[in-house]
Length: 538
Image 1 (cartoon, rainbow, N blue to C red):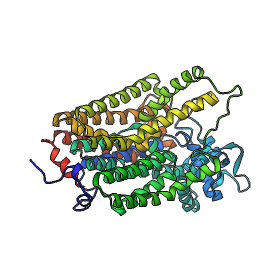
Image 2 (image 1 turned 180 degrees about the horizontal axis):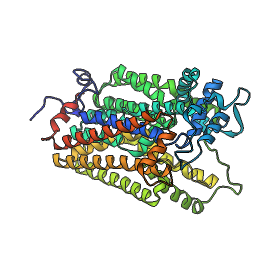
Image 3 (image 1 turned 60 degrees about the horizontal axis):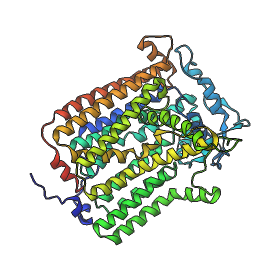
Image 4 (image 1 turned 135 degrees about the horizontal axis):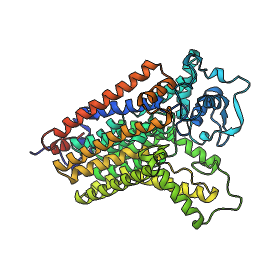
C-alpha cells in the first residue's frame, strides 16, 4: 500500500503546517490506559510511602512553607529549615511503621499548630533547596495559602501537594506516544514509548512525593514534544511560543533544564537547514528564546551573583585537601554504581533489596543500550535519523555525564560521593524513549515489534507490582499477613480509611484494564507501517 504523504526529508514548512490533526488525538486506547495506571500508581505511592519518607521531602516541604511565610526566596545556603517541617517529621518518625502508632486523624496538628509566629525557623539547619529556582515552591506555597483557613492536618496537606505532583506527571505516557508518532513510529512502538514512561517504578515513586523534579519532568516533556514538531518541519510561531513557555517553566525549576533548552534551540537550527526556510526558522527561534528567557534569567542572575550557573556544595571540604584520583575513584565508582542505576529504575530506598537491585538495574541499563545500538545498526538509519536521534537523545547523555562529573568532583573535594541520582535523567527520558521506539520501528518487522512491546509491557507491569510489594517492609514489621501491613498503611494514611482503600481499588482496576488492553493490542493483526507514514505529516 502506498501513501501520498511526503517522506520526512521532503517536508516543507507548508506541508507540516496544513491538514495536521491535533498532536494528541487518535492515539491507541492503551496509551490512555497507561496514563490512568501511572496516575493511580503514583497516588497509591502518595500514602503507601509515609509522609517525609521520600528523599529530601522534609527539605522540599520546608521550602514551600518558607516561601509562603516570608514571600521571598533567599540566596544559596541562606534558607533556614522551618521548625514546623522539622516537628512534623519528628511526629511521623521513621520506618517501620505499625498500625497502632499513628496519631488519630482528628488529633493530628495543622501547620499552624506546629509553631508560633515568633519561633518559625531553625537557627542552625540550612535548607539546601535555595540552590534551585523558586517556581515549584512558589506554586505549592500558593496552594498552601488557599488551604490555610481550612486548618487541614499537616500530613493531609502534604498529601495534596503529592497528589498535585502526580497529576503533573500523569500525561507523560501520552506525550511520549505523541512524540514517537510524530517522528514516524508505528502503532506498537507508539505504545512502547508510552509504556517506557508509565511503567518505570522509580518515576512512579518520585511522582508520589513532593519534589521539584516533578515540575521539571512535566514541563520538559512538552519541550521534547515541541522539538519533535520542529524536527518534522513545524516552524510556526505559535509552536515556538508554547515550546518557549514550557522551557521557561523548566528553567525556573531546576538547572537540568539548561541542556534541554539548548536542544530545543538546536532543533530549530536543524529545521532551518532541512526546510531551507532560514528566515522563518530564525523568527521562530527568536520567539523560543524570548519566551524561554522568562525562566532563563535565573541562570544569568546566578552567573552575576556567584560566578557560576549552579552554586552547589553543602558538604565541608577535606581539611587535608582534595583526594587524589587513586583515593577518590574507588569511593566514587562504588557509590555511583550502587546508587545511580537503581535510582533510575527502582527508586530511592531501592537498597532494601541490596545487591539484587544493583544487578537488576545495571542489567536493564546494559540491555537498553545494547538493544538500542543494535536497532540503530539494523535499521540502517539515514543521516536525518541520526541527527534527530542526536538532538532528542543528546540531553539525556549530557545529563548523565554532568551527574557523573559533579559526583566525582564532590568526592574529590569532600570524600563523599554525593549526587549520584539516576532520577536526574527523568526530564530527558521521554526523548530517549521516543528515539528507542522509532529505532525499533525501523529495525524490526511486525513480529519483532510485537515481541519487543510484549516484553516491555510484561517487565514494566511486573516491575510496577513488584516495587509496590517491596514497600511491605516499611509496614507492620512483626506481621506476615499482607492485610495486616495494608491496615498499617491505611492507619497512617492522611486520607480517610475508605478513601485509601478506594485508591488501591482504582489502581487494581487500572492495572487489570491495561493488562486486558495489552493483550488486545498484541493480538491485533497486521503491520502498522502505513499508520507510521501518515504520522509524518502531523
